Length: 76
Image (cartoon, rainbow, N blue to C red; front, top):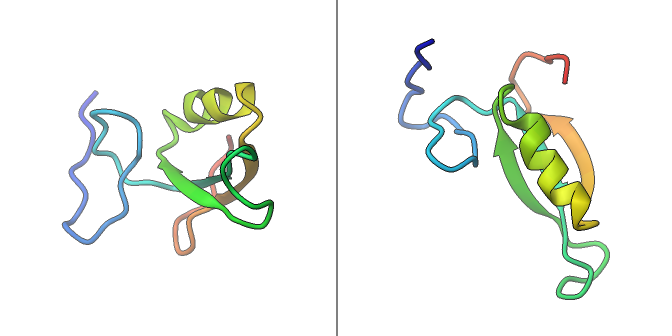
């Protein structure tokens, strides 16, 4: 399967080597380094939403998962 190439200004997935358009925001923080209100964001395409989320969740870092504003809402 071929992944479409996103436009230069498109948000792309944070998974290593992935160039697919992002449709999910995975908001996280490391409680040993960041204050509770701080959020960092990884972006995910539908194919990598679960693996990136599992990686963050296994470390206790995942806080929220939301659709990227303006992207179609997809089932996780």
